[in-house]
Length: 371
Image 1 (spheres, helix red, strand yellow):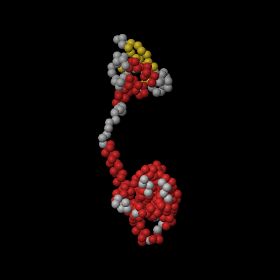
Image 2: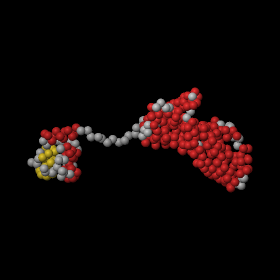
Image 3: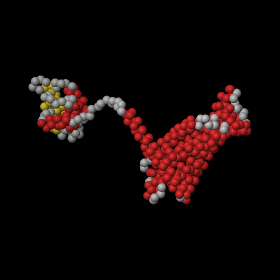
């Protein structure tokens, strides 16, 4: 079995002729079509060169493709081929080759992206409203049958979401209070308004920072844990097992989490605000020389009690929203690990964003109260 080769001679009219010999096929293991194509390149570029394929022992699609590409897809009178070879070349010419087209800007893509976002938001909103409706139905059911209330799950969520969160919320509130008081002290000292640090720190910590810090920490800590827990139950088909046994997943899984965190959130707000004020008082004592007794005696005079009421109500609302968002994304998790990680991340981001938007709306609606 001879390998593919060629020789150069002249035809009867004195023109240069390339005669192909041997096996122009993949069956000849010694063939290197890249080298053959490189060797024949000067003859491919000459439009007067004659080609004689009559002496080839075999020609398959691999060899024919090399030749046809060199001939730029044309088969004319310069090529002497057998009927079988001509049929092979004709078949290859009939094959459509993919043409590279330059990437053109599709002006509809932004509209499509916006439409997809709107559809996703509408789907989330529909599921969210449905979840609220199911919670209300379960609460009506518990009003008729109080003995069915899941006390054990409720108390467990109070412990997990509230008691175990005391150290981190207290520490963060304390450090934020120190940082705020330290920065304000240098500015107020310049204008001789040292005493006003109680006004600024008291109002900001009680009315705004206490609820916001609590909500952000709870969303990142307890909210993500709730989403992951429900997601794992989805992956391991525990929720499907509850449904099979006739146990309501809303009553046993979602409702205790919502009520537990909503109940404990105002207490976490009080705890965070107290440690924030304690840190601020410590920094004010160090930087401005204000005593702790003066700070906490003067605080009720400059911060109206209604601000504390607003703070507790915001804590109640934020706790409810964070838990509802966490459960919503947990129930949407598909039975795979990729969906679990993506939904947990979306849960935290959505909860924090929702809390900030609610706080902004709350600040606008209550701008004339307690200030």
